[in-house]
Length: 83
Image 1 (cartoon, helix red, strand yellow):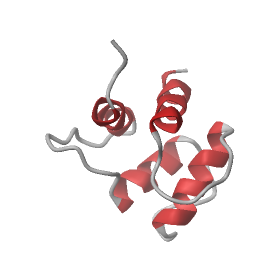
Image 2 (cartoon, helix red, strand yellow):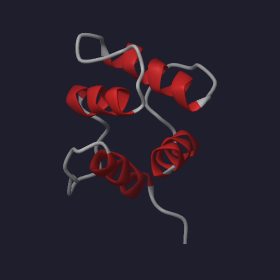
Image 3 (cartoon, one colour):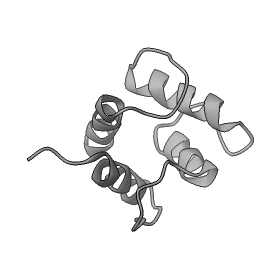
């Protein structure tokens, strides 16, 4: 069975040194900053969430778009972090 969006977010959180969440929520600014740092992107803690999501999408090779990560994007991010 394919992982849920919640499970993918938690996998990503744990792989960048953050903690799992019981409830299904989007990434906090701190979690996005940790993800950016893990992917060695230009965006960081001083950037806004939109800029950090854009930097992550670029680092993983995803098309630029606005808003929260979709399931396919989370799968690509998780796969990149597993490598």
